[in-house]
Picture 1 (cartoon, chains in turn red, purple):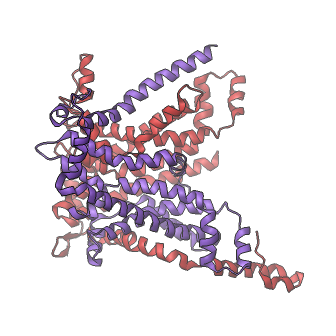
Picture 2 (cartoon, chains in turn blue, brown):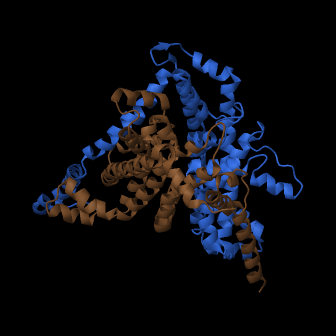
Picture 3 (spheres, each protein chain N blue to C red):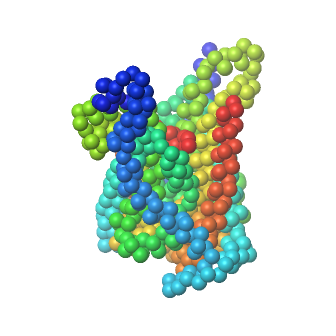
Length: 311
Length: 276
């Protein structure tokens, strides 16, 4: 709605239209001043934007407690030359894509289940969502105990069926994947909730039309549910990738990146180098993570949103 | 007929599966926190031989010279201050962005989205805080949480305000309200429901945050509750019963939040539909 400023009342009809537009702009300038942005912007710029820009300089330095020396691309050469560090790079991609993929598949299935007229729905919703609220540290420590190779509940349970359970977190080939499972356990409730919000928005007529055309349950799922729930899928993909590529807490608590460096990701490498005092190397890791996250998220964001408007 | 049957069968299967997958870990935490030290050392999912819950709670509080009490105070101060500042500042931004379209909006949106996506640069941030004299202080940590959490709140508030009609604004202006009064007397109450959502979601996030205190306030005197878990876990020995009692205790605040604000938490987290 255009705004009526008091002075407009005496204007003639001809002068009113442009005058009103100008005064509504000055009204907005007066009542919604730009200085409202300043306090928030100040905190954000000083503690987030400035360090982010500074990281592009410090990534090219040998940086210790005492001095800073420009060394060009050496940190990046070290980063990708040393298997201990480059492992974090590949693990980050594995962690991000697998957790995101599993959350989409399982989240959609749970969402469909919980929007159907299944028995015990309220209970199921609460139970599946609750892990989202427990601290990551608590979840990590609990699963560390459950996944203990000798005493852990999981392997004890498998032993009942005569299965010799693996060293979930002690086997270097397995540790990262065990953490991925725990991350999915923790985050699938949120994905399911986002899907449920999308699923209830699909008009029932589509399902009825498909049923009239003789489509079975499976067919209806693929040709009605999956395409029409797409906005929710976009949200789940973007959110889980942003979280997954940057994940630090769960990995740090469960394995500390170990055994050795088998489950290190970029975020844990960055923290380790920071703790060891290799500040330049740590910051180079930050820049690598920045590039990875941007290179994955931005094209995906653009592509998914374009697809959405086409529909 | 058969539909009702299958509805119950699927439901029962789902309930059993979810109990095994989602409830067992929580039951495990509770059972371990009831046990005595030697009993819990075997990590068995069994009923405790002796109930030692109260002794465990006392021991957890007494550990390291009552560190948990300091930590609870630190976490409470951090959460309350960070969430209050974050929500007020973000509401001011969201309010102006939604009410006053300008050519700056594109640039601002870009930075808001960057705040959501870009991983913070740890060492440069820590060094900058050192220069400012706020490294390893609760105040510094408050500002860090404000800076990292603001983007989410701004998007939430802007989306909400753009659907609120302006009539009340105009009425207040005719009554002679200035911009500050307009915002606090009209804007803030109008945004009440979305503010509750933001407060609840961000309280849980900040309270559960472990990484930022570890990066930017590593000292013992500033430890938050999440860091107290490491008191009971060392390289040589883990006192599992106390560890799980501690987990149980620090899960109570978010649990209470969940019970009272279930609807707002769900609304806030699913509205994470990051629409640019």
